[in-house]
Structure formats: structure tokens, C-alpha cells
Image 1 (cartoon, helix red, strand yellow):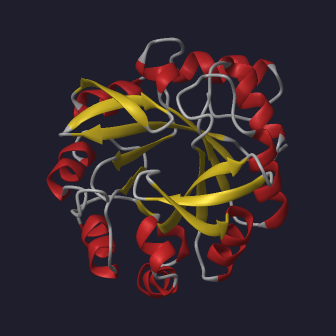
Image 2 (cartoon, rainbow, N blue to C red):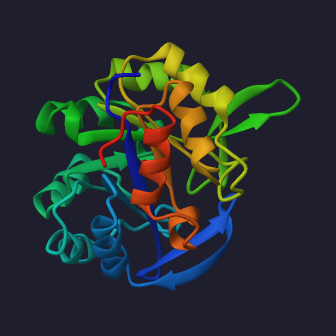
Length: 253
């Protein structure tokens, strides 16, 4: 448990505004992403992840103007994704200030996109997002694309291993079942993925309190991402980190 664990805030963007739903639906708009980014940096967050939640479904890519506007105001790492289809799309975001880029649907459709992007930008810039749901009849985790709308007959654990093999630097693993529910991360999912890959895993979906973060770090996650608990003022990042420090988790305070 010596490696420093990262706390990441998610900014899901819909129509240019920060929004939040549950289980990838029932989305509410909450405010301006630049304001949220500045606020979370001031409150001690380690990194930010920006996702344009409708970009993939609406067949467009996340706006570079928004990325530019945010990076001008913050100094912490910003990871960006949503509707990216090509290496050129990925390079464009890095050129406009994103520190890292994540891809989901396009990589599932064309796994070579991962190795091609890594060849140009290096592993550290490329994160693969894996949105997954448990099939209750088989207890198997399957990959979902297009903002959770479409199931793909690919086992999420196998896909995680393939992404690592193709050169991805990190995995951002979201459980659709637990997303926004604030009842804890899907620990079984995170444990299984962490047991099968060596690259860092960012756990996403379900954080409700500091114990949930503790549990997911114990399950092997290198970083934990949350939205609701920060957006709705349940915790500030610093408050959360202080509690985790007391529990023996190595976080930057």
C-alpha cells in the first residue's frame, strides 16, 4: 500500500455543462466546467477527468475549445475523452492541452487504434476506458460502448488484458451497475482486473464515502474517480484525503 493513491474528480459534460446521472441515465446539469475545475483544484483534487457524455452517441468528438478553456485555469493533470475516433483526434486534444486522453468505443471497434496512438504519443498519454456491466445469469462482466448504450460480446477482464498488451498506460474502469448510486465501487470487478493487469487501474462508479475509497484501494486500484460526492458537497477532496490518511492510505494532502 506504499504507492501514493490518486483521487480524481469526474466532470461529465452535457451541452457544455457539468452534469451527473445514475447508471448512465437521469442526467441533471449542474454548472460551468471551468468553475468546477478551478474549485476542485483549490480543494486538493489530484487530477480531473473530462468526459463529453453524448459525443460518442451523437457522432462527434469532445470540443477542444472547452479543453483549452479549462487547462488555462488549472495546473493539475486533465484527462479528456468522448467520441474520439482516430489518432488525429487524440493528438489534437494533447496539442490543445490535455495531459492524457481516454478512448472507449473506438478502441473496442479498432484495437489497433491503441497501439497506433501509443506509437506517436507514448503509453503515459493513452488511457482506455472500460464501461462494464455484470451479466447476472453468467456472473461475467461485459464491455459496453456508446455511453453504456450498447453491449459488446467481449469479456471486460479479457479486454483489459488486451489493452495492456497493446500498450495502454492506464485503464479507467467504470461499473455501470454502481455508477452514481453512492453504495460503493464494484470491488469484485476492480479486484479481477487488478489481478490480471500490471498497469494502473482507475476505479469509477459508486463512491459514497471514504470507506468506499479505502475498500477500492485495498482491492488494488491505483486511483479512484468520483463525481457525485464532490458535486453535491458530501466531501471536498481534502476532507476525503484526510479521512483516508487516518485510515492508513497513502494520499497527497
